[in-house]
Image 1 (cartoon, rainbow, N blue to C red):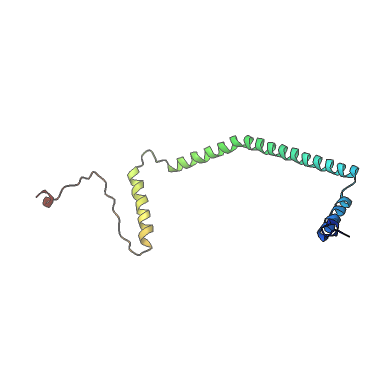
Image 2: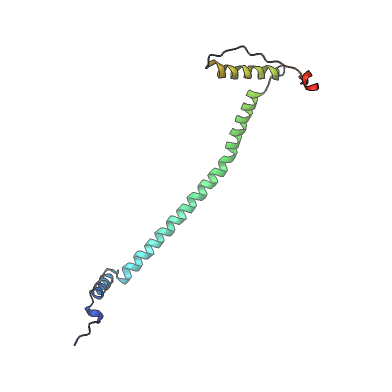
Length: 134
């Protein structure tokens, strides 16, 4: 009499056996599989070496360009400072007044509330009210 718990009668066991057979058939033959793996590793190693060499090349190129970029930035900064520098006879108050007038016009001209602006210069002190003294 056959055993009902025999694994060979189990459909899952049969499926597993078929999977094993397919796996054995798809395995590459010894010589060609090893050659493919060796070539794959060599290709991967060559790509790593090429990537490293390219990275070092671009790093050195960047370092070589730093003085040029620094020189250009220095010239640009000098140009900006020259534009913002005041004349020997120029007045700081005059430039501030012109700047404030321009800002005022930008702000109020769009509202139609154009008024003359006067900039008062001098020393100011706050005096206490007479009522506060009593």
